[in-house]
Length: 152
Image (cartoon, rainbow, N blue to C red):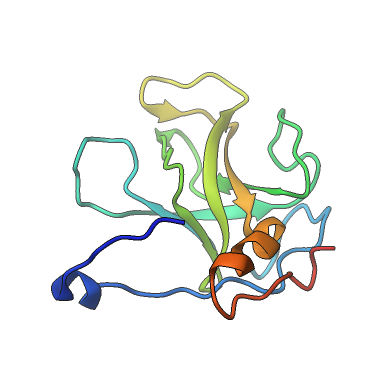
């Protein structure tokens, strides 16, 4: 956790999101009914204030990240837009599904070749599953639940 000093103007811009206490059922290939998006500043240019958002299909299973093996502590997202597009690699950014935080971006995985700055068809955004860390977070954040209901 990071503690920062903010002035009143900065504090007025803060928006809070709830963490999803239910999480996902393991081995679900497509999480139907979940509207998920990645949010962050990307790596396009230094000090660019433009916030980026990308709609994702999220999977939670051993083969969710294509050619990369995964486990219960990870979620994988794939862009819903087809074709080649600019890569969105933003470690530390939130994965938000149905208005609640479910993960934190930790790596861009590519099973095929990247074409310049564009991602290939088999590019996956890997996220740390927030549910896996509820016990630790609850030590530092008051009134944070100690566990997710679906994560056992």
